[in-house]
Structures are given as structure tokens and as C-alpha cells.
Picture 1 (cartoon, one colour):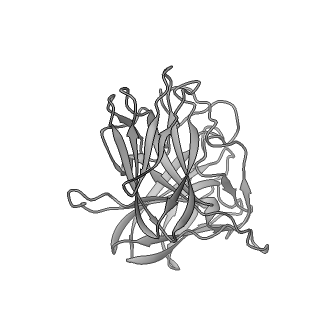
Picture 2 (spheres, rainbow, N blue to C red):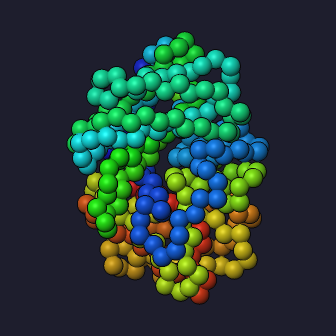
Length: 304
């Protein structure tokens, strides 16, 4: 479970919990597409654009500034910890990674080419099964770079038919010193190079061009109730590609309409209300038209 954001010395601001499930981590007809490397995007316009989630964390400029998130591991063993950041100043902004209070390594976090030119840096370390507190602490007086997220991925052979446990923990959903920054909305990006660039995670799903093509993901809800389902997509062609939304084998929206986007790099998110039960939920998009689904990036679940 992600911790709620707060600023040092200020009251906790209660916000709606949002979880992003990457489309490529589900089951689908079609392929995972990676037209551009997700951690080497070069963007135009809008400083700090294309952050994931709702913003970035700009920590205090001092030694010891930190970002802390919680990860619930499904097994004990090695995990890949990845931090996404941007930093255009000349000073180095390294950070120490600690797991449950124990230092496990250092991320150098070199200067980036531009504010929108995000980079990632990773280490492999062991996590225990269950709750783990992951903390990135500034070593130098400049604090940390602008931080987007900390991503955790299991490093092990996955049994056939199972899904790898890869989770993006948004920096602004953790505990931190500094402020939450909103330079531009993440789903109104403008990019150069790389057709279809700008996706989150490892790629996006390009389904088969036929009626009945689908994407299905699993979401473990902490409680049952009313949610908003956001689907992030891009569609540079002229046809409309509706999809049937099915939750736990029940049709909740017979025709969620995905209209064309202005360009292949202009991702957008549309939403529909859904009802989830506590625990495991299966959410599925079924293509209604003969052209299949649009390119789908991820599913975003927000408690109403």
C-alpha cells in the first residue's frame, strides 16, 4: 500500500488513492510495442512534461532530504529498484537507497540533457516478503533530483502462466521532504523522435485488428465500492474504436468510446465508473469494432 503524501512539518493531505496497472502486464491479444525506450525520452515544450502519476517531487536542497515509499513484496529475494528522475544543474545529486532502515546502495543520478529528458538508475537488492520501506536519501547539500517514481520488479523466473510483479510507486504518493510539482499534465505531452513514444512502464499493447481483441488486467482492491477506471491510450488514425468494459465477467460499459488523438505521441486518458469488490478483480476491454482496440498504455484505478 502506498503512503499518503505529505510535506515535512505539515499536516497530511488526504487524497484519493490511485493505482496504475500497466496494460503490458496483463493478458491480451496482440503485441507489446516499444517504439521508444521509456527512460530515454526527449521532449519539446512544457518543462517537466511526461512525468507519470500526477506530478514530481522536488525535495529540499539539503543533505538528508528524502523520498520514502512502501512496497508489499510477494516473495523474499532479489528485486530491481529503479528511480526515475530529471536534473539539469551541474552538481551531482546522488542518493542512498535503504531498505527497512538498512543502506543497500547508492544511485549516482547524473545530470540530464533537459528537464523533460528523464533518466532512470537502478540497483538490485533483496527484499523480504511483505511490507518493505524503500527510502532514497540525499547525500549532497543540493538534495535529490526532481523525482518521478520508484519502480520495483521481481528478479526471478516466473512460472508459466503467472504475471511478473512489477509495480510503479509514484514519488508523490510517498512521504518526502519538499513539495509536489505539477509543471504539466502527464497526459498532454509533446515529443520528438520515436513514433508512439511517451508511454509509461515498459511499453504499450497493440491488439490484433479484429473484433473481440482484448486486454485483461488484475487489480487487488483494498476495499469494495465505487471506482473510476481511467484508460490511457493513443490512436492516430481516423476511425473510432469502441470497447466493451467487463468487470468480473459483468459488462459495466457496453461501448467505451476511444476517439482519434491528434497524433501518435499525444496520449490521453478516458474514464468510466465501475464497481469493484474487495480483493481480486478482473478488468477487461473487448474490441467492439473490426479494427480492434486502440494502443493501450495502462489502466488507472481511483477510489471515488
